[in-house]
Image 1 (cartoon, helix red, strand yellow):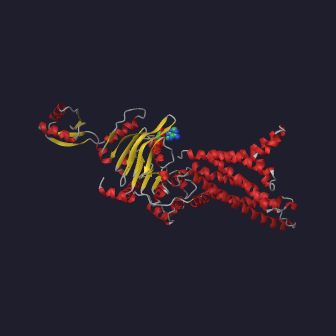
Image 2 (cartoon, each protein chain N blue to C red; image 1 turned 180 degrees about the vertical axis):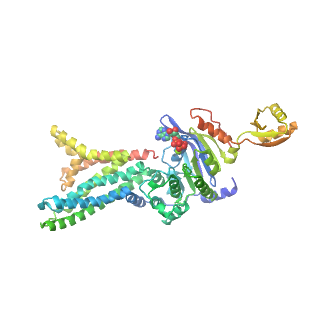
Length: 303
Length: 267
Ligand SMILES: Nc1ncnc2c1ncn2[C@@H]1O[C@H](COP(=O)(O)OP(=O)(O)OP(=O)(O)O)[C@@H](O)[C@H]1O
Ligand SMILES: [Mg+2]
């Protein structure tokens, strides 16, 4: 489990990360979502001690990263797959990591196998690697110490759809085995595919966090009735605003249960009733669309 | 979350009671990193290549009566004072220039330890290179005098070899210091050559124009003080001058550099 408490980072007058709190649970893949410049990488660098926080702490199962005697055995880290010496071969990079963490040399071959880098590819210098190959090598480096926690910054960046599927399966297995995965992305679709939980960050602040299922469901509901006018009248009488779409569905900000009760009391026959979709998407688009807008963050926590 | 998750958490999330990473292991890793890149490999190879070229050059161009072990040692030793600092610089700046520090400093989060390991491995390479130079010099002397038919002269004492090694290591450590201080390969390389080529010239000019400065020069001119080490064992006061210039141009800036590395952001 990763616990982040009151973490912030200030660069002169820029506040890159602004007092954030969240946890990434064991057994789950947590997606750290936010537009460019939101503070994802800064947060992850602070977790692993590469950047000194202005306030707050980050702990891995209760311990500060710097206090781990051999961090590679506890936490696998990939912050930037391209941050490698271009003149070194993939195999050498893995060998160095294996030596440093003290794991047996055969882990190198096992990891190459796991991320499907062929022996010939492994003996090529990483300067000639594609972005996807670098991501695979980065993941192999992170996994070499057989850690229980993974911290990955934009791991799906540069992967094709098959690569994303492969990574999802790999991380799924890792989490199902009790591991903790924290991965960042600036693409909602990517996170939607891979994560169980989502922590959304914008301009350094947490905008919302919760399980993907809850967050995607959004606020409010959409209903359809045999008599649309009667349904709207009943909802208005109950103090709710409604919007009707061309297809006759009625959108409100009440929860489905409430709408059902109102319709029942008014004797209106519902033909459809569900949560509004895309709440997360709207929120994310709002964040992405206008970086200047301040104080419009909707603070919402899903259980 | 379900209870299974909690159970799994209980098993896996305990930190393994592992020992820390011993310094010797980090030194071994840093040594390997010096050799396993294309540029690193050729830099190491150049130590030997330059040594052989210098030997051949000495045989071809030095007057026959100067084909002594000392001449060979000097011919081979001089290029070392250029190549060794480059090796020491790149070992450190590569972590920033090539951004490998992102991995290095997360696998070993104590940067002071990594720097210590880098310094130790650079010194090991330096001492190794000096021994290679000694052997190449011996071979050159034997072969060279055999070709020219002159007498074999062994005029390099152990003490003299010792001070040459110290002088070369001071050059090498200056590279280490600049790497820490500047954390950029081009900046550190340029500064090294300014320090060893431009600065001594300026001191020389100052000495010619300011007679008072002549007495002070050996106490502030690191290059001049180091030359005492290369030109035979230094005498009395010269040792003090070597020490004082080393503190001034090596130890103090190294402390500033160490502080900078410990506080800097790795990204
Ligand atoms: N050294 C620095 N000095 C000043 N500002 C900085 C520095 N490092 C980061 N920032 C700022 O902090 C903010 C957060 O940057 P960060 O790299 O964490 O964002 P991110 O969420 O990872 O974005 P991306 O999706 O583009 O990777 C940005 O506005 C960035 O400009
Ligand atoms: Mg980033």
